[in-house]
Image (cartoon, rainbow, N blue to C red; front, side, top):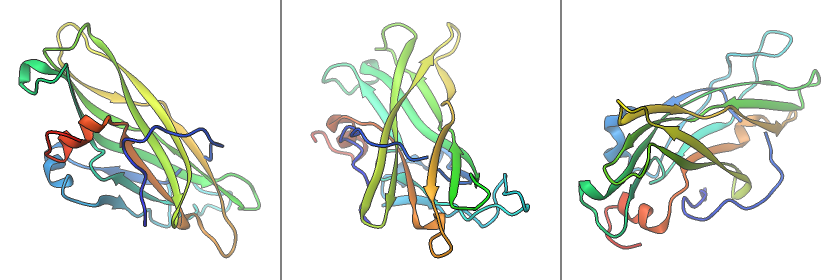
Length: 205
């Protein structure tokens, strides 16, 4: 199954609307995750919110894009601690899903993206925009990809904070023969070629 590229910019498209359950990983697992193709949590058959008859729909799979769960940004070409601007990690994606209509032909999923954010010595000021994206695939096709930004503001007495994005909703057409489990949702930071190379332990893209 192909996955989106963490470097390519999001392309304009019709926004669909994403899964239940909570995907999360411990901060200490980041190095191990760089060696995995993906970390996926397959949603169960019951969600936090259900349809009118009390049963929730089957939901899409939720996955962390390979090498896209960490964002380390430096100022210039230096790679020492004094050159560090931002050290960010995806930590959780709390999400839920429900039927959108009484005929059960659409599943709506709502998610937020949570991050651990560290301010480096080279950051100018105490605020920064952190780019990330959410993509939807079905089999070999990328159906939708939307870029977002989280505005992180560090208080004067803190250089590490937790950020949570605004909720994002995605709609999935379903039928008797096709459940929302046919779709996959991918979450990743939006990386530059240099940032992706750093995540892969390389010095150049």
